Image 1 (cartoon, rainbow, N blue to C red):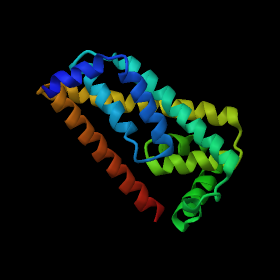
Image 2: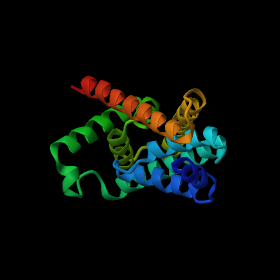
Image 3: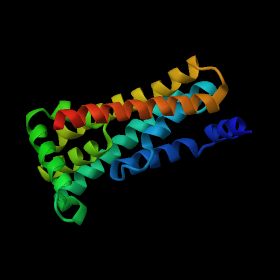
Image 4: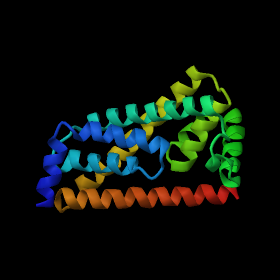
Length: 194
């Protein structure tokens, strides 16, 4: 029954718009499951045939860059200390580190931060507040978003192709692997920051 529901959802015209909404929301609120949605739809693309894997990647990349540009604009408009959560020591430390790293290695920072939820928010807000040149920022953010979307969707698709058990198992295993890799990356970068 759950497999039928997943297959039916994947075939609806609402699957990709919902994916886009979750990915854009993930740019602003790290608790929104944007990565999980991309990985799950990548798994469903292989296990059920809908939606097309290329469509998942294109929609996720477009939504990711839209969210990043929105955070950039927000950082440019409000700065990095308007709201209370921004003035907390941990947030200020993240903004300071992001600003320093962006000035030295913008491409590396944007590509790396694309895979780390809070770092992505801090980097994009800092890029806007620092008034980094929009054309260069947008181009690099677009490439980073495309790489991220392809990675997340292909991870789900690869798991669905390898792991037997249908769409439910493919989604669960691919999401578990994506979350595990995310936690591992967070741990590595957290250690390096200390």
